[in-house]
Length: 368
Image (cartoon, rainbow, N blue to C red; front, side, top):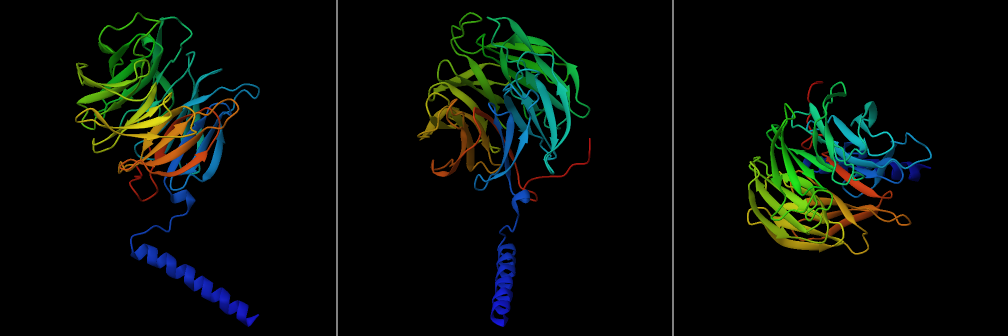
């Protein structure tokens, strides 16, 4: 017994010493709840999977199941800039915006939306408003809307009719302008973030096709950190096209087949694109608008969502999977293409959002 006690005391001293050494060296003794997290949507199971971004371990799952016998498809997910809340959209059945606290992932409210299909959700930098497009592809070229929501009390501030099947309404870093991709009309609509008024309608490329039969199929947007340019994935033509803040075309670069989501680093040095039909990820230099690396994701059916860590060193990419095959998430070192880890998670795995670890770029703002 004395020997066992001595061994126990030695093990305790070893654990304490290791923790102190980690702190002294600037390392982390963080537990899972303090670690950086990923929020990942699983469309066929109506769940959000919360992962430890360090290794892909599942911390918990959150159910968004409002109709027990139907798959209503959680589609988009985002985290507020202050790290206090995350938001997700339920796309079908009763399209809904869900609001959660990041501490404990506690549901604090939800808003049913007057639209046919809620797609991605984006916030203004101050976290006060959300923009959610009505991704209604059932209408052959008919215009649909973007819901503008005040998230403090989850009320609809505006519901402007914008264009056919808008998919992404991306707010620029100044919080004043919104670029809306119109997937069924080969155009991008620029909106004023405060009034929701249309400022301009921009052709997705030369010789756009008629509404309902798009040639380019603009899907997702990433703004430059200074808000001077934006970049759009064109699922139909297999390109990323660049535009000035005013919507003037500034060039294009070929990527893999049917590019889906795109994300840029905070310093503006890199763009990462998930190539849905190419089973690959493109790394772009936004300054020269060139592809500097293509990362193959063998066995990953339909890469879709992209999120970057704040340092712009790691990209987290979802793949959808198939009806009889699970989707998942892969963590990729952007500079080399190295796969750091990959995990199977859910089915029809679309959206992904990154929450910094507590004390590592995650701030605490007062309640709004």
